[in-house]
Image (cartoon, rainbow, N blue to C red; front, side, top):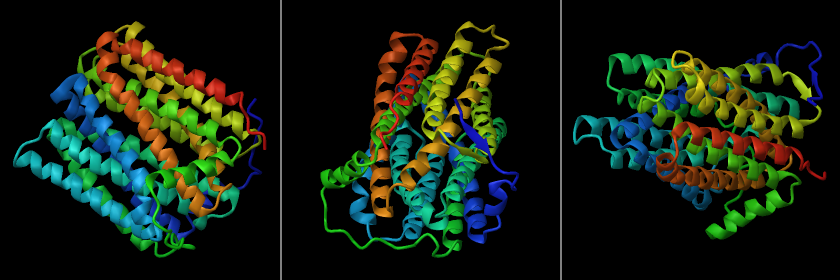
Length: 418
């Protein structure tokens, strides 16, 4: 079923990548930024849940709306600019926003509207930064196998940073106010901006010429046309949408709410443990499979989505059925499986788009993808206040996992015609 062939005894691909000074510099900055972002995710949702309970769903709703708006509208401002400049200014803006929340907490006071306003800006500029990075990566590594390895390196760095961020977050929460998770996040964005600047002009490549003014509909249509002309792209985008909707409702909101309400012992440390085991599963899978020459990439990718769904369902089932003393361990095991599936899906999905399109079309498709994922995340979050009041949180998490596993099965049965 896997039909994956191991590499031919060569050194691990990441070793060769680290010989490149530009890759090393960019990697260091992204590692710090990813760890800081994890601190923000832990801190913001924990503060919001503590303030508003299930109504904390408005935070991811607002963030998703911002991602949707920025993904659709950013092209009017960023088209014609180098990827390097777009990434640097996005990082500097996010650093300022994170710092402003900390200042507000010690002056006018922290509230859910303040968290939502900050979340809108942070999510919006993430939707500007990420497509620029994803579309420019092939300019660093045009060789398909090394491109997959570079995508994998950034992915495993993010997952390992989650481990570091989760551990650091739990340590900070034990000795200092939770708001200081956002202080560290601000510093991490500054480090990321510095690394992109230090990497020089290698991200610039062939900067697209400024495009004529275009409406949101036209910018969205360009991405949709490119996706429609690429066999299999629409199936990938649809399955990814299900993944983000179920993750938003079942994982991003359901799991912290379950723990905050005392449904499972441990509170924030248990949440950090689940996040860390997810990152471990993702990271270990990444390190192993990046050395493989996958022959049936399509099925490999969708088995990843199936495992993500099963892992999410295990988290809910452990909380519901396992004895109290072992429930956190069972939930952490589900997080591990979820991480394994996430790595399998990501490592095949990104090169799928990057190797089939030029930079302009790839950027448009990545923006479309962000718009779709933002809308899906928003839908999942909007269902939160209703679903999590009508049904037990554990059952909602299980249902989300089952829906994602079924979507993975559906996608695996729809291989591209070409």
